[in-house]
Image (cartoon, rainbow, N blue to C red; front, side, top):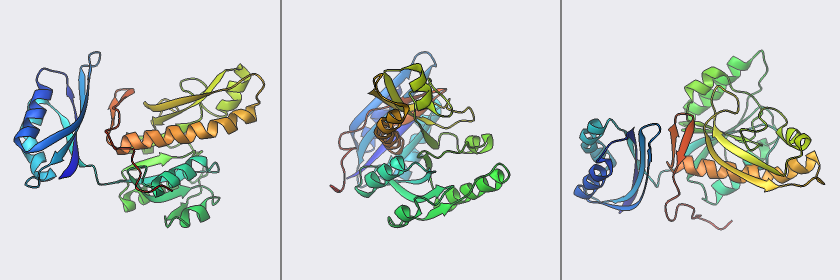
Length: 294
């Protein structure tokens, strides 16, 4: 049997879970894992259900048959093949720790993604990327050529069929137009525990405030800098005896882990936009399994 999942977003009402579970049972689907959340404040319902699909059915036939239920509950929904890896473009500037971590996790199969291209405004990591047999694109960005540069970036996204763009410490601010065009499909890692210390040099800001915790935040990119819906966060403790450069070094591991967890959640169809926030369901059993050991 093949493994698939159904993702659903709709207005909250009675009978949604019953309708979905009954539909899957009637079509020979065995539910293996399911998560749901009813946001009483926003009046929205979210659900992700994994199931095994009988050989007599196809995702297309299920999608067509489910349309009647979707119309009844005003649903946004999709059936996904869990074996199909999401195509991803990674963007990086001169800090390579997040890129290298993503490349390693991709290589061992720890992330359900296919890295189809890496874009940078510098050439520092060209050799690393090419050695992984991944196309590398150096697209320089200046205030004067920004529209042309972003058009070239979008050409790469379209030509590769990428479904997600990951900013792995890409130190350029994207235009409002690109943010809107790629809404919900660009993930950033910010080296701070947002909403504190936004903008440039957050570690320096944290050091100057004498914080005892520093962290990293992965979020969807919007036109409002560092204000996008948060997907994942984590922290590390610091003391008065550590310097601002210590903060940078300590933060690298947290940044890489937080970004990888956010990418995993999105590629696993576990994240849902909920106005200015997100709903992030826990991973299904076996979702973190790696194909290789190293």
